[in-house]
Amino acid sequence: MSLPQWIQNGCYAERPEYLSSYGYVPWLSAGITFCALFGVSGAAHIAQSIYTRQWWGFLFVLGALTEIIGWAGRTWSAACPYNDNAFLMQISTLIIAPTFFTAGIYVILGRLIQIMGPTSSPLTPKMYLLIFCTCDVFSLVIQAIGGGLASSASSEVNGDTKPGTDTMVAGIVFQLASITVFVYFFFIFLKRVRSQVLPRNLKILVLAACFSVVMIYVRSIYRTVELLQGWDGYLITHQAYFVVLDGALMVAAVGVFNVCNPGWLLMSSPKRPESDEMELRDNESRKLQGSSLDI
Image 1 (cartoon, rainbow, N blue to C red):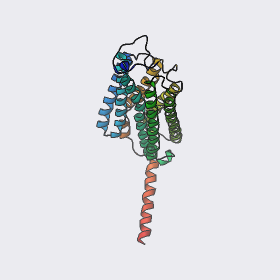
Image 2 (image 1 turned 60 degrees about the vertical axis):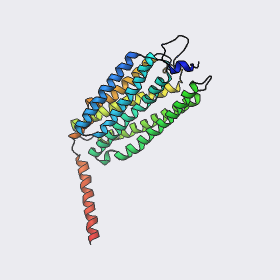
Image 3 (image 1 turned 135 degrees about the horizontal axis):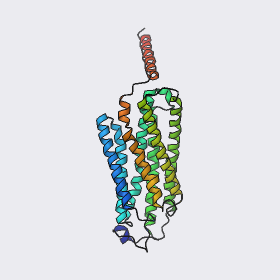
């Protein structure tokens, strides 16, 4: 049933004759709780990034800020469940937010590769950022287009939301595939360094990154299945699943790096002998080339 324009633009409490775009009324307590949790995590990441001078840590800040905007939209919807602006505010930002967290993990893996040596990974640190950030942006563009089409159709009388929903599903499936490939390369990295004696700080960072990747991956599977079921599917119309499998998992994914902060853990990490030997061989090769040119 299409909602009348006046109820989509205003702020009205739940009415039995109308069903909100969520299929329920968002919990006020959940909205306030997650705004607070992401706010604390984001503020801590600002302080930690400035203290350690690891400016790429602001990727986690941007992700937390985007989550706050999304959960603020759901908090708004708790009072105004039919308001279209509040609904679009939360659905667009909560889809985007985890991308900043994955970008931070790409940087962490790149730093670990630099420390452990180039033989620890089939890709260079720059390639991880180039390939997977490009994939993330591409998937988000597809999801944004699909979301716009679905939202526009839902506001029309007898509007067909299927084309927009299918486009969103294509985008999120592509994102899931991209994360799956990243998980594969991350597994290769872990397999190659498992025989080496890692310093305690690097072990902690690797475990934290593994934990965060698992949280994001599980959330991606949930969002994929959710959209595959459609806007009136079981998962999307039952709020508890979203609170646990999106909100709670993303708090864990970003919060683990407050406790196991990459800036602190990387500050005291010397280069591995393999890296030093590689640099030494490169320097010797350059000297030999220079000598041959002089002759």
